[in-house]
Image (tube, rainbow, N blue to C red; front, top):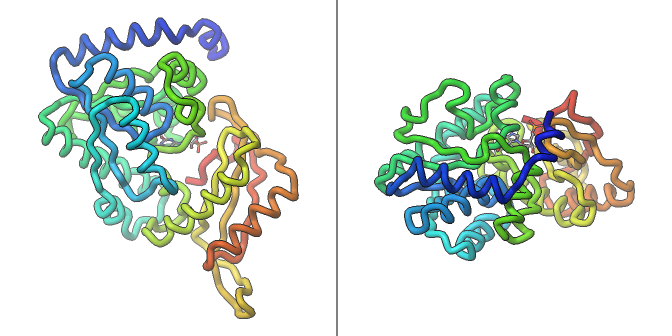
Length: 317
Ligand code: XMP
């Protein structure tokens, strides 16, 4: 079914109809767009800016869970798009919400709740009842099926966004990732955005197993940087690192260290619905593993995940 839709998809027509839809719903109202810098939310922000001009406001919520250099990248991208932007530092609120939580679904819900509470507050301050977000079809399918509570899916599972104080527009709700990329190219967005590797809304919180603290996020942020640097040329769908909630025995500087474990995951996929673990050349894996244990003082062990989706999911949480 998807193949058929893909063959029929016309990015230009899609853009025209979503501009019409956004204008018809928003009318003269100001609309805020949650932008994380990923292809989905940047396309959404570009659409709303194209539709409403200065009535569009992009909001970047800094949750303290982004990759190295990412907040700067997002703000630069939005500036280049010419869209009015507001930066919200919410690191404290997110880490408070994660305190003591180790269950994956509880953590996702804590993220979602904090995200929407902060957004509701910003919407109120900005005097708007509308937010636009980049929910795509796969997010809806997985949440409705009960596989994972995607942070950006509310209406489809019966939670009213009004509870948080606003209405939500989701122009990409019927699209899968490859079509979102087509729209990004048609809109003329830079390659860094249109071809950007998928990165989940709850960001590094999904890659810190167990409690999400600033210190533990810093470990996975560094490991992610190493993985991304070393795998640039592989052209895989997603490449990342995960910090385990367990510890293992190792030796550092001649002393026993009961230290952290990091898993590297590198997968091929078309639409994230299924995925296969990449057979990365062993020399490359050795280099990644060596760098991670050498560059992160508390890490004593690095593993490679060889599991496809299904039965695993792409993320660990
Ligand atoms: P899974 O782990 O379900 O991931 O195989 C499928 C794709 O979705 C991304 N992902 C998320 N994206 N919010 C998001 O915006 C989420 O809560 C979320 N969980 C998973 C994941 O990175 C992969 O591309």
